[in-house]
Length: 465
Ligand SMILES: [Cu+2]
Image 1 (cartoon, rainbow, N blue to C red):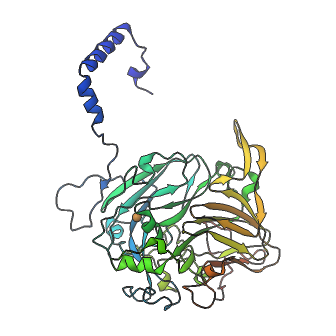
Image 2: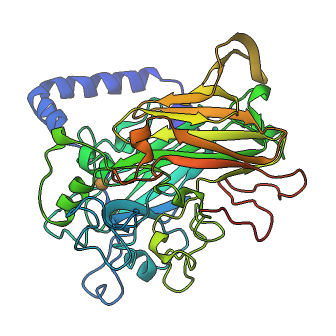
Image 3: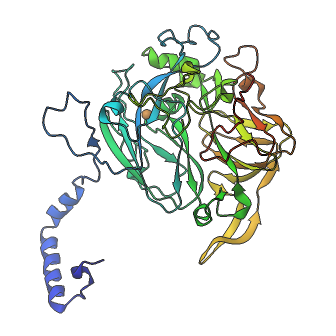
């Protein structure tokens, strides 16, 4: 804007100069056409700094250190109960002690030293770290590909695909067939400025049938302007009707044990034989869904071992790589927002016992429709197609924003998949799979919630597993 050249009106002399230039171009038409066909470098993944001790060779390219969130992509192991259900695929015979299932995934490495970042190979989590962006704010997400330790033969890139993000610039869309992936030991910093609030999801889009199923899935959401304008109050959309007191993200996905075993054993599954053995919420199967977050702020990655940066969960070390709880805690009369995304391959039906839910958003689109009004964040009501239900149906790749008012009677209410086959762990007898609880505590016993899925319970309270 301050460039004087650009603002100067075109003089007659300039015009003639321009004409001459155009003639010259026409003369060199063949050359110009050739030049236009030359590939132009738009973006290049920067070389990631190597672990200390391997830096002495040459000068490293400067990496982008201006970012809001730094994720790594790599592989790792998780624990799914019980220990013996689908021999020989579960537990995987290569699994380290206490763990059962090989995965690909992400880790939040914000604030890590280079050494700590590179030590996170083989320590990824299921599901991926949750992040949120305020509407109309810029957000830079740096992704570093650390490679797959179990599979040095695979030279797979990874990406972050912000699923449902409207009008994404291809280069930041993370869809490698039309743009780029991030090769091993490279970084790419994605840039977003979201205009539409709501619950989204992200996943790796490289070899996506495999990488999505292997666990590179998580929730991200866009906080509406209204929440920023009214500090201390929280809304799902720019609509007073979507106000809430507490929020919980529930990422749904599945594990087909054979496919995960194949990846650790250098085999290829036949994807048309797909048959999930485990149906998970936030990477855990019931009853583990009820256990706390692995640390005080597992979602934002601040609970890590201060020296190594590794995820820790002292009470349940087998679940250290599945840090996010699905227990929903609230007090009578509180408004609770569930942000649900399905990144598995099957349709799911989440049902509550005796809690009326209102679906206010679908695929990051409000169901209470408002016409924009200049100078107003909340527009005029056009139509309200939100609906009340006790069962939320959700197909793969879809999201729902669901608000319920906590019942007046303290107690436990189940939230479960009404497909009974999805309530089993590996076909084993007993309850499992995609199931958690809404626990309503007496008024005045819980602290306010600061982060989504924060485990707010009276001190000393633990669920009966
Ligand atoms: Cu990937």
